[in-house]
Amino acid sequence: MAAAAPITRTPDILVVEDSALDREMMRRVLALHPKCRDVYFVETVSRAREAVSKYRVRLIFMDNTLPDGHGSSLALELSNTPAHRDIPVILVSDWPSPFMYAKANAPNVREIWTKDQFDLANVSRVIDGQMRPRPA
Image 1 (cartoon, helix red, strand yellow):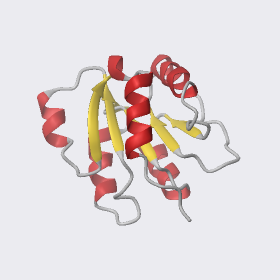
Image 2: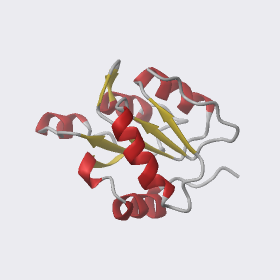
Image 3: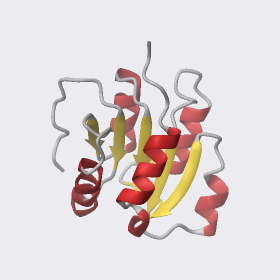
Image 4: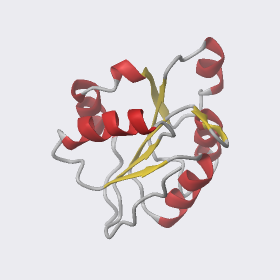
């Protein structure tokens, strides 16, 4: 598993995805949007927790099935934390199950997508309409 690259700016968007192939697909789609200049990629729930604690992330795209837990569980955890409850989360899964929809009812989970739905039209709609404001 490759370590996340060091960053020099505070990321606006956090992507939590353990598949290298899916990370590359997401990287390519996000690169097409002008507001996606500061994106940070991690591969596990624990690294996502670290990133959210360290940076003022404005939006999270997160796989549900990760090596050390579930994205839906982390979304619920974040929604119960005052400093993080307003970060919009988009769960992106290979096969969203009815159980996942039921578990992902945290108020910060704005949408649940399949990987096929991770395209410029959906990404643009979410970034332009749901990303939390930059801190003052």
